[in-house]
Amino acid sequence: MKNLKIAIQKSGRLNEKSVQLLKNCGLDFENYKSSLITTASNFNLEILFLRDDDIPGYVEQGIADLGIVGENVIDETQAQVNYLQRLGFGKCSLKIAIPRDSSIRELKDLNGKSIATSYPVILQSFLDEHDINADIQIISGSVEIAPGLGLSDAICDIVSTGGTLKSNGLKAFADVRKSEAILIGRDGLEDNQTVAELLQRIQSVLRAKETKYVVLNVERVNLPKITELLHGVKSPTVVPLAEEGWVAVHTVISEEDFWGKINVLKSAGAQGIVVMPIEKIIL
Ligand code: PRT
Ligand code: ZN
Image (tube, rainbow, N blue to C red; front, side, top):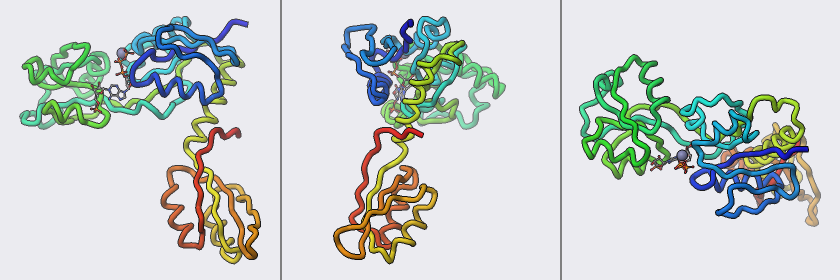
C-alpha cells in the first residue's frame, strides 16, 4: 500500500510542535534538519518538510495527503483543503496596527490610507466586508517597520504577545482574524483507514493534554463531599490507605477548571494532592 504523506513546516514556529505531536502519536522517525522527507518506521507515513506557505497548495494538489499549517496561511493561499482537526498550538491573531500617535480612530478612518501586509488576500476581504477603500502595500517580511519608514499608515500582521508592535511604536487597532495550527487533508480521504487511525491518535493526544490525572488522600468520612465535587468524572477510583479510615482517590480533571477544583477539594479535606500529566486518552 502507498505511504500516506503529511507535510509539516521545515523550520519556524510550527515545526517543533508539529514534530512533537506526531511523536506523541507514537510515530518513530528521524528528524534531520537537512532532509526534506523522512519515513516513519512504525506507521504507514512519510513526512515532508516544507515552507508553510507551500503546504496548503501541496495538499490541494494531492502531492501531500495531509498537512499541518496555520489557518492564516490556508486562508491567504485560498487552497481548497479540508479541515480535519484544530491542533491548539500556533495560536495568534492577524491584526491591523497603527503608530501610537496615529490620528486613525475608527475603521472608516482607514479609507484612503495605505496598509502594509504579507496577507493581501485576507486583508482585502476584511476591508471589503467593512466597505473600506485602502491601498494595500504587499511586503514579504518585517512588516512592522513599514510605518516608521514612511511606507504605510498602518500594517496588518500576525500578533502573538504584542511585543513586536510595542517595540516598533505601534498599537493594535482592529482584529482581522484569529488563527491556530490545523490538520488539513486533501479531498477523497473519507475512507482512508490510515488517516482515520492517525486522526484517532491525534485526538487522544489532544484530549490528554486538556486533562490531568489527580490522586489525593482523604478521610473516609469526607469521601462523599469529595466525590460530589468530582461529579462529571465517571466514579473515581477509591483505594484504602494503610492508615485506618483514610482512602486515596484517583481521578481525571480537565485542565480548564483545574485550579478552582483543587482549592475546593482542599477545603473539603483533600490532602497530599498529586497531579500528573496524561499521555493519551483513548475513548
Ligand atoms: O519559512 P516559512 O515560510 O515556513 O515560515 P514563516 O516565516 O512564514 O512563518 P513562521 O515560522 O514565522 O510562522 C508560522 C506560523 O506560526 C504562522 O503562519 C502563524 O500561523 C503562526 N504564528 C503564531 C506566528 C506567530 N505566532 C507570530 N508571532 N507567526 C508569526 N509571528 C510573528 C509575526 O509575524 C510578528 O513578526 O511574530 C511577530 C509578532 O510576535 P509578537 O509575539 O511580538 O506579537
Ligand atoms: Zn511562510
